[in-house]
Length: 252
Image (cartoon, rainbow, N blue to C red):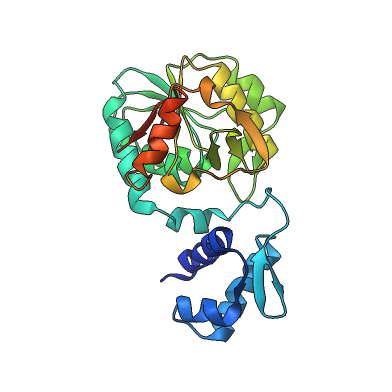
């Protein structure tokens, strides 16, 4: 397992199962205790977890944002499936917004040969789309948030307000029946809200790991989005629970 993938796997394990001794994590990931300690200390420096007397516990708050390099490793195949499914729905000539995040990057790659207008607040997404010969690319500008490489701030919101789009493909950090769509960073959440306002409809693209997770900043209630597209790892009974409240969740 790549180091970045192992970091997120450790983070996921602690989120799911709670307090875990370092020695158990070392056995779980088939690495030395020294290696697992270095991994955990890296996560601790980010605020994701804590180490107390050889036991790893969850971090203190919901504002921890895992680095992009770690998130990109998580459910990579599932994100590609989501992107390929969404790409089939996009019609040539449409104008769309594509969010940042690893799923947004996957969608950009799936649309590279299309004849569409795309606006994105993400440098990573823009760097992919700029190679598309038929894509008209709009970058709203603003302050660049590092290391996420997304534009934020009032000037970004103002630039978005000058346009109207057919669809907004929004990535999120968490999807929850009660708390709706949430994001790690409040400034990113504000950009997402602005993008929703200038789009005829909003489609959430989120891998199954995002379900049941609640991040720091509220973006919107689930009733504000047209549908949520996720992967087949999401349990069918969970899809039914969303459908019972008239929320459209599609597994691809």
